[in-house]
Amino acid sequence: MGIRRDIGLAFLGAIFGYIITLTMDSIIAVLNNELTSQNIPILAFVGIGSIIGLTAITYYLILQLRNYLKSRKAVETVEYNLDLVLHHIDDFIKKWRVTRFLRLSYRREIQRKSMWVNRFMIRNHANAIRSSAKNLKVLVNANERLFTSLDEIVNNMVHLGLELELVFETSGNIKQTKESKFNELISDGDNICVKFRNIIPELEEVRSKIP
Image (cartoon, rainbow, N blue to C red; front, side):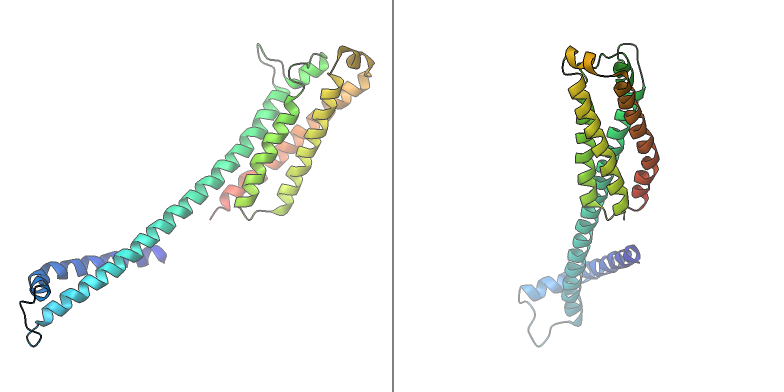
């Protein structure tokens, strides 16, 4: 209805503009006092009224355009933050699971007890997801349970990250850590990935609810 109304007003504005064109000579005559107050043509009144009407419609359409641009920007901002959350989640899952030629997965590094350089990365991933999710939550009226579940997963990531930082702080810590602990760390990371996989469709559903 809003779009039809604006189109109708734009059409009406065009009619007013056409009337103004037809009556411009009379309007100029009125403005230059070439017509007496007792002998002002009706056409001149129509022209002046058309100017007022066209001005009002133009102002209204400008306001509508400004509101539309603001709304479009808000939608794009929500989509950007949603994509950012999904990107950070996907990035963590890939780096946890996938071993490439020159880069071992986090999982493989834990198995090999060689997670020195990347021991801080789990917490960094968690902080990135938390930050982008916080921005998204502010922008949308989304399911509170969804973000509560996401926060719980992120908290598990933070806990896992702290444990990895402690275990891989020194070679002495690694030697003192039981094998079962490494298996537990790997299991925790695997579970986090599974939970992320389950929550991704719910996050993507947020996109369909953007106004």
